[in-house]
Amino acid sequence: MLDRDRDAAASALAGMEATGSHGFVVKLGMRRASAGIAVLEGRPDDALVALSSVLADYRALGLPFPVATTGLLMASLLDGAIPEVGAATDEARTIFEGLGARAWLDRLDEASAARGEAEQASAEPAERVASSG
Image: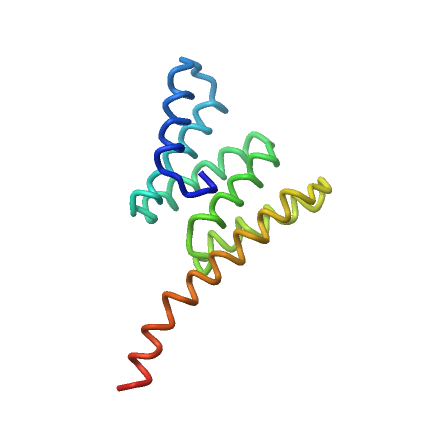
């Protein structure tokens, strides 16, 4: 999902569903995958609601690593200017730092930088139009 490949994400979700597992954590993983697919299908608002709910459930279960990887997913797929995304990114960073998870921190940095560049590029045409008027 971090590669923004909708077909691969849908295939992974289908694989999770095919296991027939009904455990709560497995269902959270499926909800997270569905939310990521929603972003890739152009429904970021739906994804934000779902991912915020998944984060709350992972926190309630005391599962910091899934909290952090969900924050990474949000940083990779959603607008970092959204307060919930920024908070999830910061929380992910804190968890990864606490774990000494350098590779995960690198991915988070890459995701944050890539989203920032994409947001800046999409804002530039609007800025040019506004300044030319």
